[in-house]
Image (cartoon, rainbow, N blue to C red; front, side, top):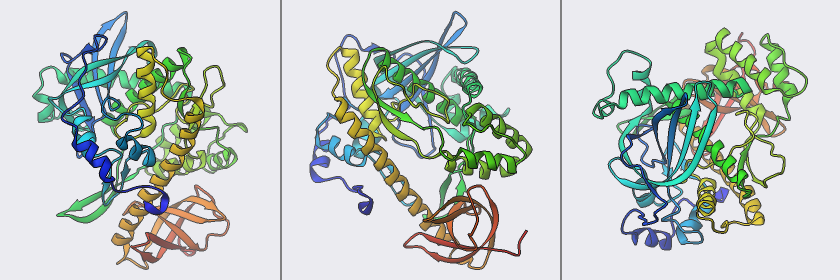
Length: 474
C-alpha cells in the first residue's frame, strides 16, 4: 500500500478524533423525517460490518411500487477538512485484501457509529423511488431521515431461500412480514434489471475470487458468484445512484460522476464475438453486445465467466469525472445509463461521501462545499487511488494464490488470456481462481484466447505466478 501511495494505518490525530466521538450523530432538524417504523433490512456479505445501505418496499400507488434506499449519513460525523476526512481523502477507498481489510474510516465509525447496524437509530440520506411494473422509475425524491435497521441478512442465505422452497433464514423469519417484503423487493429489482437490459446494460459474470480460511489458514480462493439477493442490492443501488445524479443535474449542481467510456478496443470485442459464433457491428453498440453475451451464456454456461472477464478487460476501467449540468456526459457504457454517480457507500468510498455532502447542501439550500476545480482534481485523484487499491488487492490475492499453488509446479491448467500488451501477457485459471503471467509461448496471444498453461514458478512474497503455454495440449 505504501509503495502505491496508500496509507495502511491511521495517524494518531485521526484515531484521537475518532475516539473522542461519544455516539452516533443526532439532529433536531425538523426537515428530517422519522422512518423508523418501516421494516428496514440490510443484505450484505456474511462477514460485512460496515453497513452502508438499507432497503424497504413501501406502499403501491398508481400501479408503481415504492422502494426506499437508506444510505448511511457519514458526513454528520466526518466533517470536511477534519483529520478523519484527511485520511479518507488520501486513500479514497477501503482496501479489501485476502489477508486483511484496511478501512477508509476508523472502525469506530465504519462498523459502529456511521454503520446502519441492527436495532440502532441512525441518520440517513433516503432515495425514494416509485418503480412501475416495467422497471421505469416514475417518480423519485431524495431527503434526510432517521432510520432503524430491523435485521442484518446475508446474501447467500437470502438467495438460497428466494430460489427454492427452503425455509427462510432464522433472522429473516424472526421479523413478521419480512418474507413478503423481500419477495416484493426481488420482483421490483428484476423489473429494474429487465429495463436496463433492454437499453443494453451488460450482463457479465467475472467470478471474482474470495479467500476461504480454515482454522485461520488459507484453504482456497473460490469464485464469489452472483446470486438473486446480490441482484436486489445491485439493481437498487444502480437505480438510487441514477436518481441522485439526476437530482443534482436538475438542480444545476456540479457533481462527481462514475463513467465508463465507449470501449477503444471494440474491434477486439467484435473479433472475440466472431470466434464464438456471434456478429457485432463495426461501431460500439451495447445492445448488440448484450444480445451476444446472453446468447453465449445460454450456449456455453461453463465458459461464460471466462468470456465475461475478457470483455470486461477490453471494455476498460471506469473512472470518476466532473459533471457540469448542461454538458454532455459520457455515461456508463456497461450499465447503459447517462445519469450515474457513486452515492451509496460513503463508509467505503470517498466519492460517495463527497456526493453526500453536495446533496445535503443542496437539500439545505446552502452553497455546495466543493468548487468545480476541486471536484475535477478529486475525480482524477479518486480514479488513481481506486486503481492503486485494486492493484494492491490483486497483488495480495496473487500472493495467496501463489501460496496455494507453490506445491503444484509442473501442473497444467485451462486458462483464458486476460491481458496482452508490451508489458506482458496474463491469463486466469481456476482451482484456485487467479491470474498469472505467461512468460513463455505468449507470442500472438490476445485477450479472450483460451490456452492450456503449465505452472513453472511461484513467488509468494512478490505475488508472482508464472506460466508457459503448453503447446502439446488441446
